[in-house]
Image (cartoon, rainbow, N blue to C red; front, side, top):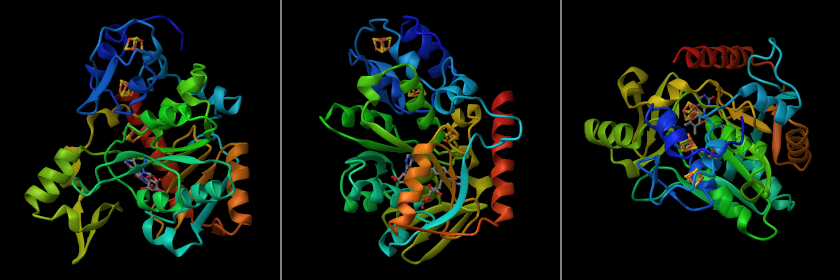
Length: 346
Ligand SMILES: Cc1cc2nc3c(=O)[nH]c(=O)nc-3n(C[C@H](O)[C@H](O)[C@H](O)COP(=O)(O)OP(=O)(O)OC[C@H]3O[C@@H](n4cnc5c(N)ncnc54)[C@H](O)[C@@H]3O)c2cc1C
Ligand code: SF4
Ligand code: SF4
Ligand code: SF4
């Protein structure tokens, strides 16, 4: 991960965008000091002459990226062979105690409860999350949530990539800002790469990272517009929740619609084939469902994550239950190994 001065065209355009490996994370756009880049249909495009400073290449999780170097940066060591889902300190099965959080959230509401706790005790004053709007339900819009109500509004999963890193830079520009960041593994990798490259202006306000577990994401055009609305005739504004549990489940005002994954596979983002991180291995705390119902499987990885989680539990924001869900852990290992293997051959 050298800091060479390379142009956008010679680095990301050639090696990432044109090869179909761009994860639409937005980090390149976020770090360009000359505002040369814009995301167009999810991918960066030059809108001004590139000054060849090389910063976009330093931030991109798909360019000159080494997982073991990043593990060394975050944890001071790289993983051992018996750590199939990355380095961690503790595992927990947890749930938000607040009914409002639990009802709004995807699974056990751990992500939202941790943010709510950190906002309440002043540890952060912003959280970079993914909200959505009425015109395009479930289309992720990066949001800077600064209140409990804004956290609740953004709870729940949107299965399309969100260029959330764009807002981290915005948060860091605000004086005295302290922010948390929630993102998929590719977004967490981008933020860690920015930190490792010493891009302080863009990351100095970051306090902690919550990583979502992630198998894949889908194009909004394909999944929501063409399939769910176009083919199945579902009014998108009637969908209350989307989840994937062996199949895609759409909870609507008139019941649950089940869609086999084989029907929607073609709308998967192609770049996800190159992604080897299932469980956000570089986050402070990683959260996933892994078949649990209204509980979140939580991987606490760093000292910061450990303090945050135990603080939230002691303050009554979270409850836990004994870690004896063998099926969920076996699935975590299996999905992590499968994704890493598939990425190596992609
Ligand atoms: C694209 C995608 C694929 C996933 N695939 C899996 C999977 O295969 N297996 C599994 O166990 N878990 C998967 N998850 C994670 C799972 O859906 C839940 O997010 C996780 O279990 C945490 O639940 P929670 O109730 O604690 O989160 P909540 O309290 O509901 O909080 C979720 C947080 O994630 C943010 N968010 C939602 N969508 C996005 C997005 N697209 N990009 C960035 N931030 C977002 C929200 O704004 C919110 O802050 C996936 C998530 C995403 C976004
Ligand atoms: S950060 Fe901007 S100016 Fe620098 S190489 Fe990338 S596009 Fe060019
Ligand atoms: S993966 Fe992210 S940083 Fe890399 S080119 Fe795509 S949007 Fe830019
Ligand atoms: S599978 Fe990987 S690249 Fe695709 S959205 Fe999830 S973390 Fe990002």
